[in-house]
Each structure stands twice: as C-alpha cells, then as structure tokens.
Image 1 (cartoon, rainbow, N blue to C red):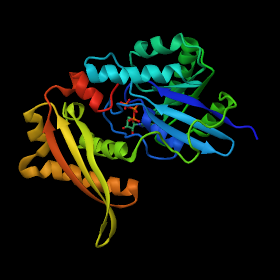
Image 2 (tube, protein in one colour):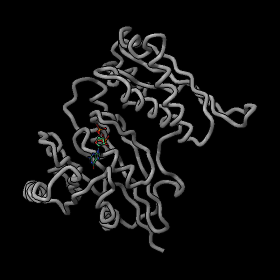
Image 3 (cartoon, protein in one colour):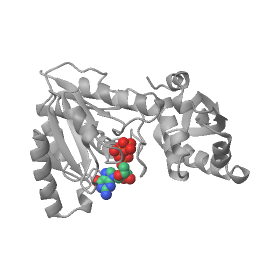
Length: 295
Ligand SMILES: Nc1nc2c(ncn2[C@@H]2O[C@H](COP(=O)(O)OP(=O)(O)OP(=O)(O)O)[C@@H](O)[C@H]2O)c(=O)[nH]1
C-alpha cells in the first residue's frame, strides 16, 4: 500500500496563533500557549499518524529581529524549518497590522509551496476577511488561503486534506506511535515555563529558563509516582526575589499549577520540587544557551 510522509512548517510573527494551530491539528497539547509574544523558543514537532500517511508539523518560534543570543538561536530554528519542509503554512493574525517584512523576506524566495492561514477570524467581519484574502493573494500568490480560527477550531478540516496533496510518497520518518520528537522532560519544563509566563509580568518570563534536573519514577504508599526536580534559572538576584515572592508564595503557586498540569500530562501522581538559580546574562552566553538546548 502506498504511504505518504513529509514535513510541514508553521511560521509567522509572534503571537499569531501558531502553537494553538499546531495543537489543534495534532489533537494534543504539545506547544505551550500564552497571551504573551515569543513563548515558543524551540522548534517542536507534532506528528499526525494514520495508516496511509504521516504528517510532521513543526511549530516554530515567532519571527523577529534577534536582539540577543537566545533570539539568534530561536531564529536559526526557523531557518531549519524553512529549508527542509514540503509545505509552509504561513500564519497571520487578521487583526494585526504587523510589519511582516522580516517574515516575507524569508518565504518569498523559497521553492517550497506556500499556504496562507488567516487566523483569529472569530474577531473579524466578513469584509475584513475578504479584504485580507485579496491582500495576501496579491502579495504572495500562495497555493491556497484559508480563513480560520485556530482557537475555535473553525475551518481547519480542509487544511489536513490540502496538506496531504503536497506530501510525497514516502515511508514514515518517525515511529508511527510517536507524537513528537521531544522528551517527557522537555514537556515538563515547558509546562513550568508556561505557568511562569502566566504568573509574572514584564521581563521575568523572558529572562527565565527551566531545566528538569531529576525525573524519577518511584513507588509510594499510594501507588506509582514521578519525583521531579526543576531548576528555574533567572538572570539577576532581583528577578529571583520576584520569582519566589513574599514568603515563597509566588513560587509555591507556580509549583502547584505546574504539578497539576504535569500530572494530567503524564497521567501519574507527581512530586515536584523547584529551585531558583541566578546565572547572570544567560540569554547572551553561548555556553549556557548550548547547555539549555539552543543551537
Ligand atoms: N481570538 C482568537 N485568539 C487566538 C486564536 N488562535 C490563537 N489565539 C490566541 O493568541 C494568543 C497567542 O497564541 P499562540 O498559539 O501562543 O501564538 P504563537 O504564534 O505560537 O506565539 P509565539 O510563541 O509567540 O510565536 C493566545 O492567547 C491564543 O489563545 C484564534 O483563532 N482566535
């Protein structure tokens, strides 16, 4: 029997809804989603497996002009997603007047077939949709334009069958049981990072990295459990104080919210221990970026 397999890259500016879209297409919560821009830092694969095909979606960090080392690495991961894809899904927010030139620069000269997804149409009128469809048609001459709402899963059905049209006949690239290329530890640290994005303002989320330093399955009196230790890295002592909060209250809140979600994700009881550590300017230091998994 013939089998199709290939790679589909989801790209666009920060906060347009790329992670929401990938999670909706894959049917699992793989990428963290927050109202803040630049949440996604790594390229994350979401794999859809059916008997006759395997679609490997890449969620990528939002495209920006890099200002520091971490952002350089984030943009390198976008570059990778643009070179080895069979199809590019360019996501744009219908309500934003982004300067999208830095994104367009990257996709106008590519040989890879391009599809425009006009997202968040739940917040738009039909006139706005028509106007933007005409705009992108003229600007990019894409293979297709879909007006969608990733959040409300509106108009997504057509996307899957369209994607299949662009995939080559190929054996699967990943095990047909796999949902992603990332480890459980990676998702645990992403869940904690998500809670930090929700609970703190301003620079704290952007100055934070989470590293799972221990992940151990154990037998407790009440059954099996996972004991997890996570290190939360910030850039300055002042950030450490804010993160911990008065009497440790804030860190406790983050820990509790994280534990609940991790338990859901792993479908197991979890004991979570967190420590805060200061590494001055880690976002600009190559050796730390490398050790935290940024190329
Ligand atoms: N109203 C509306 N909001 C949406 C829709 N899709 C996503 N959002 C919201 O937009 C915000 C950003 O969504 P994400 O999926 O994290 O966006 P992203 O493009 O992955 O963001 P980065 O990680 O910064 O690149 C979140 O608050 C989502 O809930 C949609 O269809 N309609």
